[in-house]
Length: 206
Image 1 (cartoon, rainbow, N blue to C red):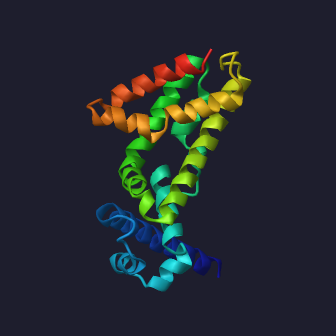
Image 2 (cartoon, rainbow, N blue to C red):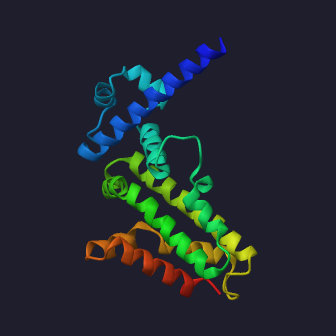
Image 3 (cartoon, rainbow, N blue to C red):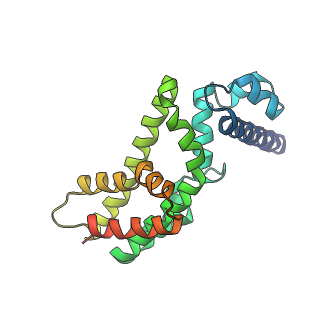
């Protein structure tokens, strides 16, 4: 019975991964508003009922696609526990910390920017996208604040800043707006990563 349960769980995971890939492709190709559960089901080769059971409706499906895109895969491992994020916590001085954070931001943005640009650009067209944007912003702020609390405990934050204020500054620096503005006028990803690391050092680190 344990073997059968394991086989069913593996099959369910493969089905869910197929659904998320199909949904991601359709969201990128057609936009959120024009993508239907019926189309996702057809592309994934499953029934609509399977999608609803696996991920819920379209808004939860979008969030599931986002989570997998953010992490880079569908493994049950949060971004904070992954090697690129662990490198930020493993830094032994402020300079290393700023560089590691900027490099983490580069890895994550390379995965998420195509989807994020599309969704944020259309957020006024659907309440679900507005809620998605708010949730993504809140998650970024929570992540930035967690990093800064670690730096604050290490004594690396400027003495004139609270941990809360420094977390908000880091969140703002790593928001999509500054990155997209600079990339869109011709900066390379490497140039932006260098700028971000330098700006973090100057803005919040002692």
